[in-house]
Image (cartoon, rainbow, N blue to C red; front, top):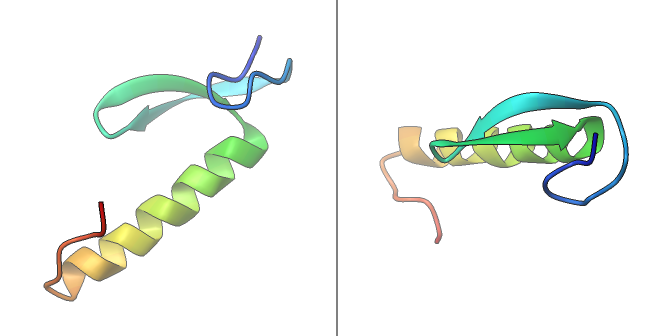
Length: 51
């Protein structure tokens, strides 16, 4: 199945990204997790995330 972010034909898994369901390959899923984790740290510090 193709990754919905990079379009690579790879094994994908389901992820919720900003309230939307996506099927992402491992590298794209890892990138999303890193972004989400960084945003969580910023939110915890009392600042709004960059948009």
